Image (cartoon, rainbow, N blue to C red; front, top):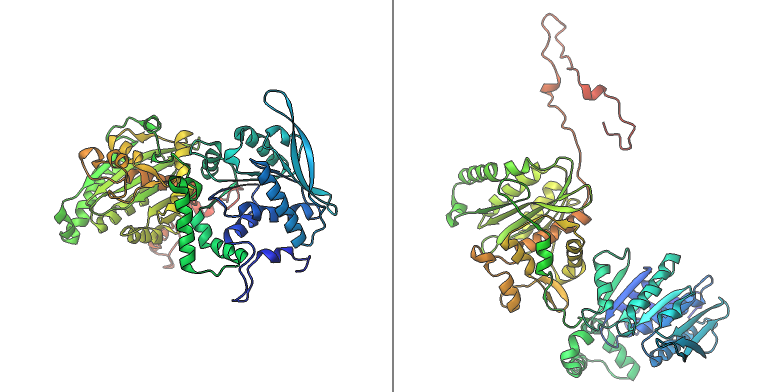
Length: 551
């Protein structure tokens, strides 16, 4: 391999029968991520530290590179990591010194001085080094470079260590945090939730459960190293044995699911703190409509007329109260008969707080009537910024029609997968905790819908049905107070409405052009018979100096 292209070792080979790449897919994605702060929540023994050592060897060896400071929970881990760095340096043909050991004077909590062994690899050409330290926060004082914290969840003083490490970001350095989980309340898991909630800037989280690593070729790599022949049966047996070994601890140790992370996602106190009293006919308000079974089969003109009358009576007075100066976003969770369709309208205030101004619920409403109601609402909402709609199952037709009418840049069609919940649900919780999402109408059914968000295998979501939901979840959303069957419908529409307000485009301002007939006067009597253009104050008005050429 040429020293001019060391990264060739990390990429897949083109030949179909060539051995697999040295770094597997998830390892490549980790190394390729150049975020200042990146975090990996992983299963045991997936080889991520080994991949990190490859990246660190390149960083320290490069001209103009950086020092790398590795912090681990044990001395054995530090030694193993440094040996991997030295191995990668040789593989990349980078000039590196031999592994050296040193003694670091470390003051314990009792004030007594302790001498701790350190390991180091130096790179003479660049003048940089990779140094393994103990997990004491004071060890990072006065140091600049890339910080790697391995098995962070097991560090004796993780909050202090993170405080010291994250300060490096101010100087443009990078921090990498790698660990299996050690409980839902551990600072490592809390940091991950902060990143997913958007509280840590452009930081990233890589989730690497054991089964995903196996799917990317982990067992094939094991076979290659041990000289075994890979077979699917052997892989299945290896995975089964691994899970059997960890037993009840497998979710946390292998599946990257922090223990004790089950049950309701939002506390009752938090939900009720964000609720406000409401009065029918005044914003914020709730509008609920229910239709008889035979309504769907009435003649079309009867259905359209009846729905329009319902709109004029129930929706129009509230929509007229919406502020024409504020942006609005909406979220929609679709249902036809078993549950209800929930549409939540949010207003973005001057203070950037999102407030629920209208909650619309349609039970047993025909498909065509739902479209009629939704299109009327969106046509009349001032400064409609964006929307997000449930595009799964029967909801896909209405989501597609709405995106066609209002534009795909304004209407997002969302498939509510576990991955989508995992990435975006923390933003809902953070917005409620920060009071940047509020004014939820105080209502028992809306409260119970939000309580129906539960954590399943570490992912906050609306459970997939009564047979898969926990007893607590079924009780939390049971029949919405005994009136109509609910399934966390408001929770989904609120979640999607917040997503739309954070990710959507912008409203489009426009001025209607008068009809041709309205722009011309009648032919004057006794004249030459030609049409005369009526005076148009807009046509002769000078353009403003503002960018964009607005009138």
